[in-house]
Image (cartoon, one colour):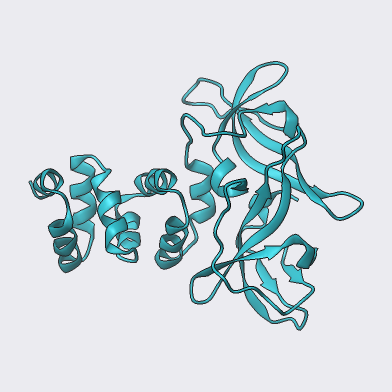
Length: 252
């Protein structure tokens, strides 16, 4: 089951009532060379709260829905632990090297599957090879997890194209919620990759301190363009909160 295909699927309890939508999968790193174990899914439920669904509570996953075996949910907001990764947030767009032929590529999806005792693990990676040509897309390959070097650890650089494709259909409020759950660096990368109008809409849904950090991280011309797309009153309030140099650059 490729994880990107789960994003946005409705989650139903045993009575057929929808409780939320899937946003990501949580995997736990192992001390051995075995692939990470998929321990649960992250679901978003109203009002904009992300919760953890253990894999043991999931009775079925198909192309249309995820069904739980219980209606009892832990409503505590999901927080990633130090030894955990979010598949879509942390692994999509990673630059990897396919062994043994040392072919560079970018991760576009990751597959997980259960074993005989229903323990889920990451098993395969969909990688688009890097061609080095701006006018040609690289070949898409599916390789075993162990053959994609560079999946674990802090990446030097990480793109945003595949993650943005998954976030594209979200309402600004939902996208803002997703950004708040990301590490600061990843949040700023994704925000900077949005077009001016979309970013302006998302900023209006974010807390003030997040707005300031994102705008301050943009170059002068881009920040000014985004502020022009915002509601004038919201833009003026945000401009007043920016650090001195950033405020002068954005208002010039």
